[in-house]
Length: 381
Ligand SMILES: [Zn+2]
Ligand SMILES: [Zn+2]
Image (cartoon, rainbow, N blue to C red; front, side, top):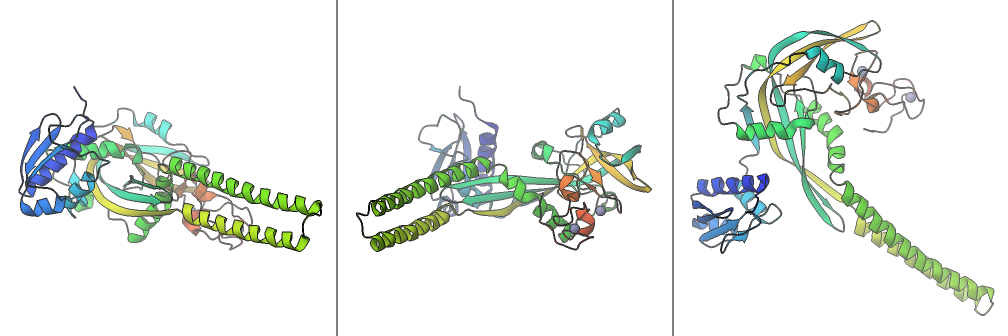
């Protein structure tokens, strides 16, 4: 018996539903396939005849074409979807639950370097999670494509990428969505500026992670090619120099040869620069909003004479407390420090020392301009 992966099952079910919706007569084929009689419009869009047989598993049904996630069928089926499925707003019908010992969860989740906190109780509440799915394409001498997901709790800015897939799975399995609560019970939309800051701070790093091996491989090929070219021209130069030393050659002519080789070397290096130049395009492909009943833990953060009230949500789908927000780099791990003036919460990059005067300052308060020496620091996450 062949084993069908969860993603191929989802792909087959999606294809079945879309084809049906487009007016095709469909049926499942064994093993792990589908067959469909297509209306004319769909035939044209899929570049297929009237009868379509697709196989999604390792073993193909008789006469079926392989439709894996790596094949062009993903794009063809995607074309049927058109602009549908780009946005989703769903209220999960998950039942209310509460963590038995919230203080102990806080002990583990809240790590502050320069402040203390006090727990002020727990209430039942609602929140909205915004999940953005981006498609990236990296093109150099080779090409890589993939998907990254950003996810945030709109109430407090907690980054919930640690359990995005669980939330999405719960959304896909939701057969009885709940009635959403009134707008007053939900956090407001983020401003365009805040959304932009969130994506600008997080996307580059999140795209870099899956591309790590690709970039590493590219760098190795580039280094190897550079070394090869350098060795070649260096040996030409050495031979020419040796000829001059033995005074067998005409010195001005050898010099001309060396100059020509040096120019050629520069041209080859410029060619490599073009060959390995990297272009990454990132596009938003889906925007999803999940409304979820949560248990809200209320805390007071205290630093010197300052105090700031914040909340952390406990999510009933994964039964986990969300990480403390990082209001600058939106990281999920590590300690948080708080600033003196507004008690902003941030991981180390958010209060890194100024490049010039070396004084630490809060990036949420001051952006990239040092409040002491006024110099603009580099953006770093
Ligand atoms: Zn400075
Ligand atoms: Zn601040």
